[in-house]
Length: 235
Image (cartoon, rainbow, N blue to C red; front, side, top):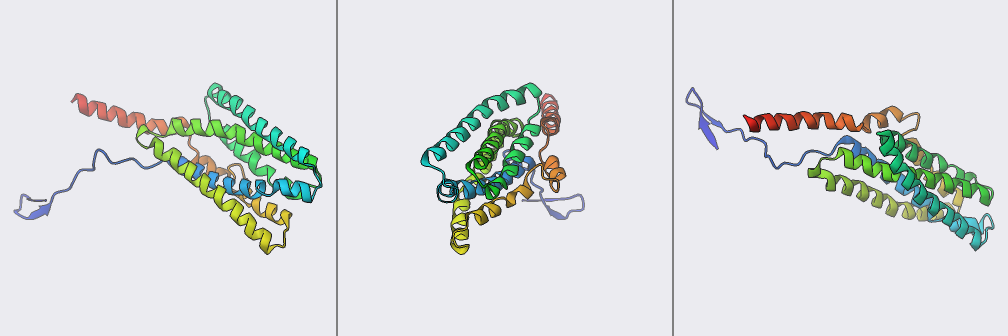
């Protein structure tokens, strides 16, 4: 559409932004999605081969493998209960999310270094403790910081990236096993690479802390925008 200005010239009409346009996802949601992709890929590269590694390399029995996996699953479930409650009590999500991802990342080098079943058990315990701490808190963080109009998109993005990592991980592990002559420890070392992208990695701590905004950082502009809309409506 066009209109005539004061000089009689034809100019295009500037369209106002659509009121139904969806806001962009906050950068912390994208950051958490990328971390989920990396950690999902790393975890699946390790866990897809771990039972076979325990039996063929470390000489563990099937019962030992079952005990290790049972302890890992129980640790994850218990940690989720307490981490969610603790984040509510503290009123802050970010420190627990960082701690959870950090523990999981730091456990990765223990797998290629393991010379006995006890070391693998310790690594799995630390890894699942980190997962339990971060999962409930991370979901609460996303719910706090995502506006209702993009809440589903935010959760969907994180889950999609995690699923991609979980699919790529075993495929990468298979390729490395074939190329490396069946070297389990080589696969585990490659799987430890995402540790350098972890939130509490010394080289990336500042970047992740700036990306993982606090709830107040995100809500402040939302409150201002809501107040502005209210004033316009009242006028």
